[in-house]
Amino acid sequence: MGWQKKILRVNLTEGTCISEPLDMGWANEYLGQRGLATKYLVEEVDPKVDPLSPENKLIFATGPLTGTPASTGARYSVITKGALTGAIACSNSGGYFGAELKFAGWDMIIFEGCAEKPVYLYINDDQAELLPADDLWGKSVWETDEILHRVHQDPQLRISAIGRAGEKGVLYACIVNDLHRAAGRSGVGAVMGSKNLKAVAVRGTKGVRVADPERFLKVVAEKKQVLAENAVTGQGLPAYGTQVLMNVINELGALPTRNARDVQFEGASRISGEAMHEPRGSEQKPNLVTNQACFGCTIACGRISRIDKGHYTVVNRPEYWGASGGLEYENAWSLGADCGVEDLDALTWANFVCNEQGLDPISFGATLAAAMELYETGVITDEDTGGIALKFGSAEALTSMVQQVANGEGFGRELALGSRRLCEKYGHPELSMTVKGQEFPAYDPRGIQGMGLTYATSNRGACHLRSYTVSSEVLGIPEKTDPLVTDGKPALVKAFQDVTATVDASGLCLFSTFAWSLEDIQPQIDAACEGDWSLDRLLEMGERIWNLERQFNIAAGFTGKDDRLPKRLVSEPVKSGPAKGLVNQLDKMLPEYYQLRGWDEGGVPREETLERLGL
Image (cartoon, rainbow, N blue to C red; front, side, top):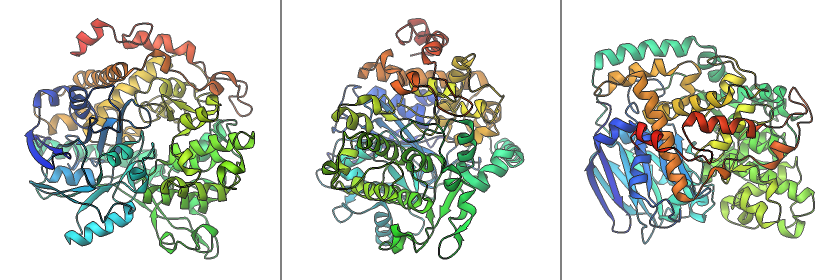
């Protein structure tokens, strides 16, 4: 069956937890997770609602393959109206929490209203109750996890929580599960904090049933072999994680450096995946301890790292000496190259703080990079920062500011706004490297043209995981395209967006698509779920999800004018590397993209498009 056919509706204002049947009509149109939860949000929430008001809703959703033996079937998503962007937000996370929620018998949790005092939700199979969290408020994610495991005396309890950042209303606060996996972007943690909801603790023993177990297990075994034999999913990601990309993207001349003033970072090799393997420091031990897998994953791209005990950042933080979640490419880029910092231990330390206190490291690092440029041009002064010199390359500034943001102290209160609001406040909005208010990640669109269109049209603001054209433009998957040209990129972006929406709805990890096409995923869905799930049906479903998200944003007040890149990327040519002299040619790609989408010149879906998709 795939689905548990049951959702949990939690009214925080009234303190009630009520079981409801899953709308199977909607499930057959949107599958699960990102698609199905977006349908519920669109039907139940006014798109113009204040994201931090009780009227906004917060949805934790699994997919039909979450918790099954399918490789990478660990995913769950958090869907809401984003605090950072005011747009549709869907943040995807791995680890073990999503599978445990499914094992407890629930496809989805819908949180409504706002609790009068801090609470957490405790689920034990069919039993669900809101419990006081006064003693947890003010605690970190790590402390919350430890306390709840002790209180419930269950080592298999899985916990998803916010840290102090979510409580303090940092607009890019995230929700962290299993200590270092996160629903990371768009400020979903701030929405959770605004509801006085500290954590969700789940224990499940029911398991997951599929429609055709024999066929399902056979096709799952076949597809696991495909992952194992692929160079990326079988070798590169297990060995180096996503950090395998640091040197590759730097050499390509597409690594945004010092707030995207440059596209190549002279210190890239010192913060790369390869550097994480090298012995260093007083103990001559590598930064990387081991790789780690999420539930059911055969790729195991996660990183577990340590910090050198003699490093200045950990003198007073012995809990950071041991192994915990390590740097991935986006984190290493945002905390490193974008801020000009090449101190691997400082980056790892700052990333630990992001995990511990629930901060999106992409938005934090990019916001700090914008502040550093404002500081170096004299707009922000020592008087603003409390005497801390926000210079590019300063590891001390990085490690100091990440703590200030997490604790809601000093200049950290300004950085907590995100780079768009920060740069607007100081009179230089052009220095904010954002789309729809969300900071763009580790690929410069001047050196990878398709990523410019990807960022500009992403429904949740700038994001690489809505259309990872790097797969084609850099890695040659499923076929190689030239990253420096625009021809064919509108069709490429649309195809990636639609397929990604389907993958996100299924409960599988997007990283599986380095080896799998939708043709590999389709038989797994078809064997797990009731009904006939053809390839054409899944492709149309991905397109339906994309257009539904677009409709929400339009109703929230977004227009085609928001499908734009920062001025720097379309007017300041690259200074070095293969893309030297180029800007991103978004204006050339966008009209063709709208046409392929079946939208009008303003980016609004045409009536015939909506009718075809049943919207």
